[in-house]
Amino acid sequence: MIIAGWLTPVGRQVGPASVLWLARCRNRMILPRQRQRQFRFSRKAALRYRWMNTELTSVMNPLSSSHDQPTAQAPVELLAYDISWPSKFELERAHLQNVLAPWLAGGIEHIGSTAVPMLAAKPIIDIMAPVHTLKASLPAIDALAQAEYVYYPYKTEVMHWFCKPTTSRRTHHLHLVPAGSQLWRERLAFRDALRGSPKLAADYAELKASLALEFRFDREAYTEAKTPFVNFVLGKNPVHQLSR
Image (cartoon, rainbow, N blue to C red; front, side, top):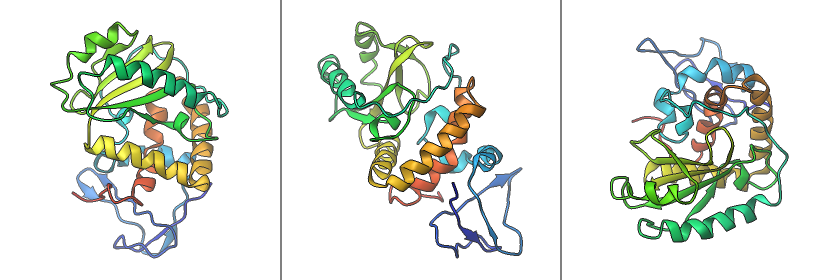
């Protein structure tokens, strides 16, 4: 898989692909070499550039944060697309619609790779539910415990995170996210971009397969290594800003 782009010494894009890579190292900007060069996005590139994404990542991919994750983790295992995933989401959505009714600020969304037709994925249904505020939705933690969702205080500044039924054996992830927040908009934008482009989805599948072999027992590293691709996709969407 190649995502090609050419950068001039001042960082201006002159190639065919709309991707602009910014990097910071020890408080200085890293610029391309004087001669134009082609950037090949591959597994090695993903590993090399994982550390470059503090400013670009924002909150799009919360599992790429250095914050603690649930300690008990199953290995990264990707399965071929399962046509039952959408129906599994719908069943859970109907259940959550009742459980979360007092706090919902809109419709519950199916996100992540299981929400993209024909895309290989970990067999975990990712669900994002909009709430008015994180503070106002704190009581939902107790309500969800009755529905077999385990709360974990992860990235608490942007969401309430849950898994079901346990942290070591997960069938569902649930994210309570403020409606209209940057995290909310970017996750939907990334999902919709993959749904709308078979080429992007195929490239993402190839990258994930490679990283799943490299980081089989390290979910955080697996997720971090996908971040350059996520940023590339979001760069085509108006909700993503490269500079702040």
